[in-house]
Amino acid sequence: MADRKKYVVGITDHMIGMPDLEAEVLGDDVEIDFFASTDETAFAPDRLKRLDALMVWGARIGPKTIVHLSSCKGVVRYGVGYEKIDLAALAGAGIPFANNPDYGTEEVADHALAMILSLHRRLWQHDALARGYRSGWQIHSLKPLSRSNQSTVGVVGVGRIGTAVINRLKPFGFRILGYDPIQPPGHEKAIGYERTEELNELLARSDIVTLHCPANKETRGMMNADGLAKLKPGAIIVNTARGELIEDLDALEAALRSGHLAAAGIDTLVKEPPGDHPLLAAWRNREDWLAGRLVITPHNAFYSDHAAAEMRRNAARTVRILLDEGKLRNQVADKS
Image 1: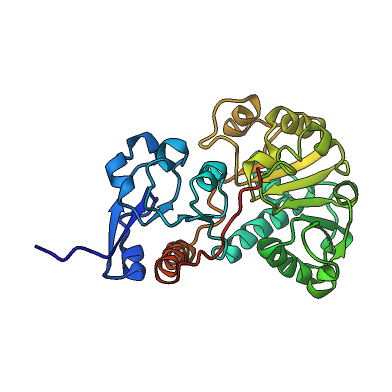
Image 2 (image 1 turned 180 degrees about the vertical axis):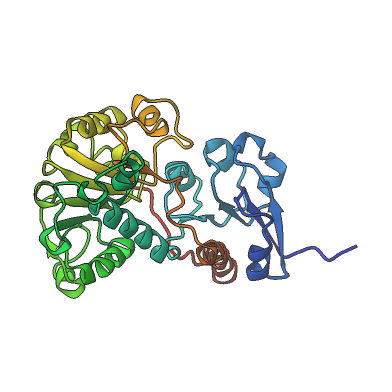
């Protein structure tokens, strides 16, 4: 009979095969229990009770799971967001929770910048319209179209990714505004952007707004009808952060139809895959009024082959440190 492992670590699910990288980091004294499911109702109580730690990708973790985590020293999410994790229930059970913020920064920043530059230069709109040109090829310029150094980008959230975006924007000459009340005074001087004390000021002054903040009670729905109305007419918005920041598709459609919003680039939606909505139908059908003005990618801004491996190794390393030292890095406190 094989020796019993010292620890048992559960992994709910992930999108990339079996947990071989995690096993490599966690070590030979750890047994991995791979549930291979995002449905927490399928997690057997007897398996949950054995766990010294639980790693989560896309599953929801609520009271029905947490009540059985009687030996669990911590829950670690592979990603950054934790909307599907019941932090209050974990706190009530005395189980700490951590996310995994130190991966994929470069990829999300690159993705955001690609959207910013392509929408600013109206590349997708050019591509959509050029399919129908049969004469006068070069005369079909799209207006207005300003130089980069005559345009202002507003960065909402100047943490790891927001800072990486700013660093990428600088060589293009954009004027850069930043709004982030969490960052200390002088942060703007160290990074190199103009700080705005009010979000509304950033929205009113920016030709392009890119979102890099978490979804919480202060930010959910921040770009609803009221928020979109505060944008400079003809602005562009890019969201590679959380879908809940732009959760009102009716308002987004109205802003695009009226022209108040020139274009939008979105990597995250509230519901994924997206359901039925007139705006999404127009996007899917390549309707003329929207062609090249709404770009949606399937929540993969974080992804590269390197980032996917980095995410898995970093999350497993967080668990290994917890098992060895009793310390949970990147711990997130319940603020409800």
